[in-house]
Image 1 (cartoon, rainbow over the protein chains, first blue to last red):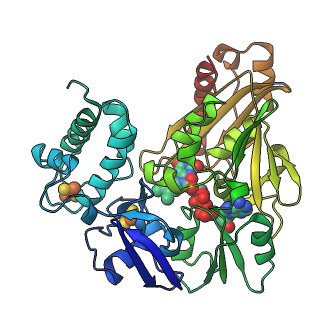
Image 2 (tube, protein in one colour):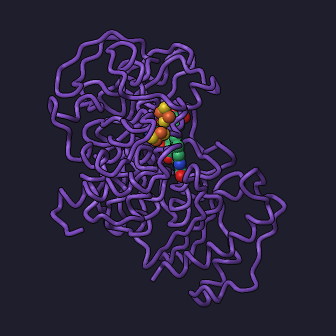
Image 3 (cartoon, chains in turn green, red):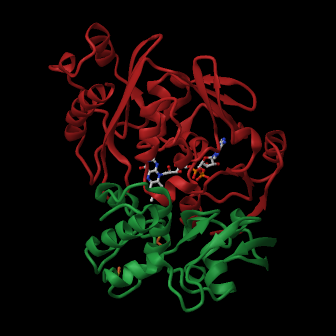
Length: 157
Length: 260
Ligand SMILES: Cc1cc2nc3c(=O)[nH]c(=O)nc-3n(C[C@H](O)[C@H](O)[C@H](O)COP(=O)(O)OP(=O)(O)OC[C@H]3O[C@@H](n4cnc5c(N)ncnc54)[C@H](O)[C@@H]3O)c2cc1C
Ligand code: FES
Ligand code: FES
């Protein structure tokens, strides 16, 4: 099947089988290997990307479901060498160790930073429920998301 | 996954017509349940018909004393509707952020998972499910485990929820998946008090004893002394049937408290 969509701001045309997962299109066809596959069953969130601005699991979506839509992957988050403020917050807070979960965590964090109006710890933890991390114990990730929300809303820490 | 064909019809009539195809056609909404089934080859459709963007299935409107929600409205979109706060709260409790951003009302109802959250609100509020061919009352829709009153090819178009005078939902969340171990939806509606339980049995069901007790006195205290037999309840690695029976009472009382 022919497929047209926008990935990281660039128009992309591809030929795919209907059963091709979005994460397979990204990683195997387009070489965008930042989106990780941790489980392939929709549990771990390592494959999280944005579809029209909302976080979704790219292992649980067919590429053809993204036809005509905007996909943002971890590769499209920084501008050149300049990290996105949420990526900076992850670095400042040591919110990663092995880094396997990190691309998915950052994509979910970006959705939360956009849609939560307060850096409420409980809401952030609930928001991160679809992303597993085996290393950090989550606390620094929660703090990094809080920093991102404060930076966006101008709320005092 | 086995190979299949894929189409995206422009409207509901085209989608239903496409379902008349040879082989094993199947509607696809958010894919949050179906894709898992395809990967395990529990489902092997010959054709997927994408209904996620059908305009008739994407609308939300107020109609008299009801709020009507399109089948392809996502859980995340439902979580910010203000018409029935308990309904929004329920939608916001489903799975996780990413699942809510893709998963839909219609997909959830058609799937009829024994622990589906949306079914509790549909039955608890006494909603009506409108399909391409008829209207089905909530009391007639949920038949058993993964089994509904839908005929082959029947497409859920929208769900009409009558506005309750008050309603509340409480669930014990499975910490890993977000699915309710037990969830109870309580509503005071024009036709009386309704209590619907999900997660505990083969599919969502009502509790007539609890409804009568709350009809006499709408308070958590009114439920004291009532119990549910555990014989037909689910038992799995998450909870025994006896624990689920106990949880029904606890969650029902909490749901009443949340009615405000
Ligand atoms: C990690 C994870 C956690 C989850 N946690 C929860 C939870 O806590 N609570 C909960 O309730 N659910 C949970 N879910 C399930 C989720 O809510 C799904 O969104 C839902 O069950 C199915 O919706 P869908 O739009 O993805 O449907 P799909 O997967 O696309 O389809 C499901 C079924 O419905 C049929 N269908 C779809 N649309 C229609 C229609 N309009 N008319 C007729 N048939 C139709 C399809 O043919 C298919 O058989 C979870 C899922 C995952 C992956
Ligand atoms: S790889 Fe997609 S959720 Fe784990
Ligand atoms: S940093 Fe290793 S899994 Fe999260």
